[in-house]
Length: 167
Image (cartoon, rainbow, N blue to C red; front, side, top):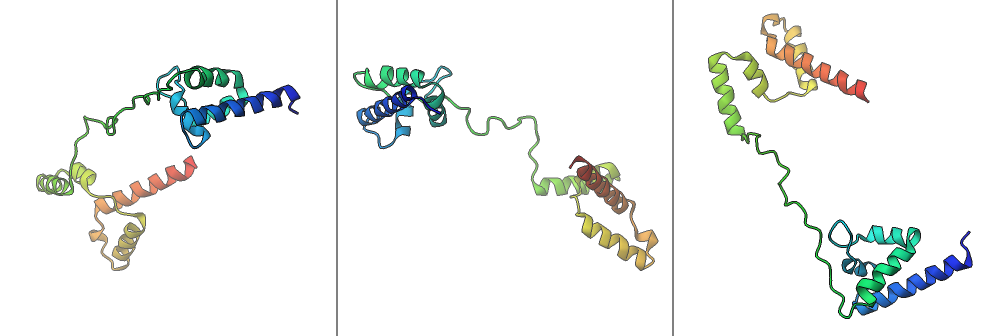
C-alpha cells in the first residue's frame, strides 16, 4: 500500500505535469514528451514517461523542471533520426516481374533444363495436385503422370509435414 509520502509525491508530480502542460500550451499530459530529451537522442516516448511517473518520479520531476518549467522558452526536441523507408531492402536481390519469369521459363523449357523449369514454375496448391494425380490414375493415364507433377506433390507433402512438426 502506498504511504502518505508517496501520495504527496504523486500529487506534487501531477501538479508539476499540469503546470508544464500549461506552459507549453498543450492539451494533454503526453504533449510535454516532445520537450523532454532522452540520452539516446530525440525526445522521451510517452510510454517511458508514464513508466517514469511510477518508477522514477524524481527523475521525471527533474526533467520537467529543467527543460520546461525552469526554461525561459521551452524548446521542442528534434525527433530521433530514423532510417529512411526501404533502406533495409536487400540490394543484391534481383527484381523480376512475371513476364521476365515466363520468358526465362520458356528458355529453360527450350533448353531442357528440368531443374530450372521446376524452380521457375509457380507452386501449385496441394489440393489441385491431388485432383490431377487422382484423375490421371482413374483414367488409366499412367504415362500422363508427369514426373514434374509427382515431384511437386512430394515436395508439397514434405513441406506440409515439416510445418506440422514445427507446430
